[in-house]
Length: 162
Image 1 (cartoon, one colour):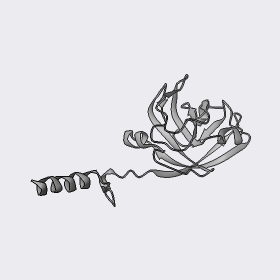
Image 2: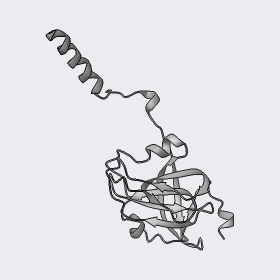
Image 3: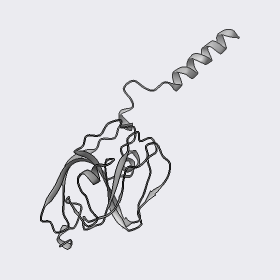
């Protein structure tokens, strides 16, 4: 009987341990691109950011979860299939982020600054958006990003922004 319990303890413990290499099918690979953000008249470039693209449901669900560091010139661009009010949260995200809600023309509609790490509170856009840019918390102020500024990426219809 003792051997049975000992064997069960070993099996249970082994089942709870994470895999060393992980399951390749569970790995999510984000494409990397560079975006530029301009003032609302497209006269002056404010910043260039290297982003990972979250354009599928699984990529949007994973987002920046579990990342412990994020460079000042890095972020994630979430691309949604329709223009709508978007809800985000910070579950399993250990770094504070600025969430920048962007409409289909590439215009910044809202900025949620310095979100709280690990929070389950919903961060919801008041206006319709089709994309969210996440960057390190506080950088939207540092880069002087304003409502109406324009994010340049092929996903957005910039010709309507002028």
